[in-house]
Amino acid sequence: MSLANLSDSINMSGARPLGERSANIPAKSGAKNLDDKPKSGKKRKSGEPAINPDDIELPDLMLIEWTPNQIRSKIRQFVNSGEMKVGEFQDKIQVSGNSYSRFMGQNGQKGAESDTYTGAHDFFKRRELAGLKMPRQKKPKTDTTDKSKSTDESTGTKGKNDDKTDEKKSKPKTKKEEQAEIEARNDVSGIHLPGEENDGVEVYDTCDDIRTKINKYLRDTPYATNASFVREVNRALGEDSSRHTAAQGLTRFLNNKGAIKGSESTAFYGAYVFFEKLRIKQGKPKSKKRVEMEDVWGRKGGMELRDQSRGIWAPATANVSVDKYGCYKIERRF
Image (cartoon, rainbow, N blue to C red):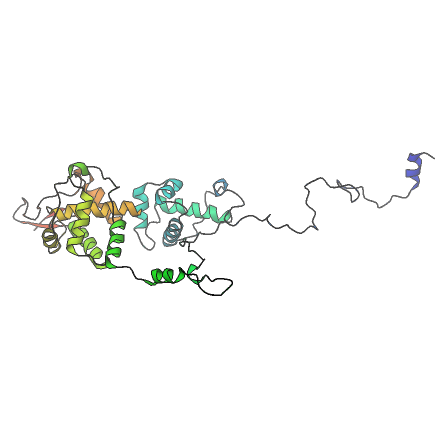
């Protein structure tokens, strides 16, 4: 009997044809077996997205999930984690520095119309859909090896140099050492501002703003005095500057009050340069008020560094006042 006839004589009713792969056909190399347990080392590392967040397309009419304040919190957490610098984040969501600073300086529901709000919302939504968790702020690495507790395996006693190590660790820092660390943190010699070579840095803080910053610095900085602050300011200006100030000049400036009162003082100009360089060194964004000051004074090249409190020409029947930006307001009286 031929093989064909033999096949026809067998009752094959109800039998299903073999699939693409039968149990008696060896699997291709590299194919997964469902019974195999996952091997160690094959899991996806934490932090690696299953897909690239940039490849995710969001719907045009997607509902906004987070409030402006929640987005501000997410941005601060993300930037402070070291994942991106502020400038890199602005480029990523395609917004200007002014838009970013203005949004971050607001509170509550303010900023809902900002491009920074919508851009950051879409950025974090894509990360969420890609399976990425919000990064945590990095902690400084510490040496887990405690050399002071090292022992001789044969005797169970400390090494001969360990007692000296314990003394060094327990010894507090001297005042001179702490002051040296503070000076290093405040060293802004590597920062250059436009116009500083001619003492022409444009100023975008009022006198009261600078007084607030100085008083906070003197209050929060250990061992800080008027004289030590003046040294920091003059060092920020450079040796060739003609706007160096003295402790007496700083005291007179701090005793004034008003948005333009003391604008002619070298302490005002020098302190502005110092704080502006320090802000740039620390990577902090401009405040909301600072951005507004640039809008008000930008065309005039910054605040006028002269005594503006001597009065201006105005009708006798007018009320003259100074607003929070240091600008005169003339209102007619009826």
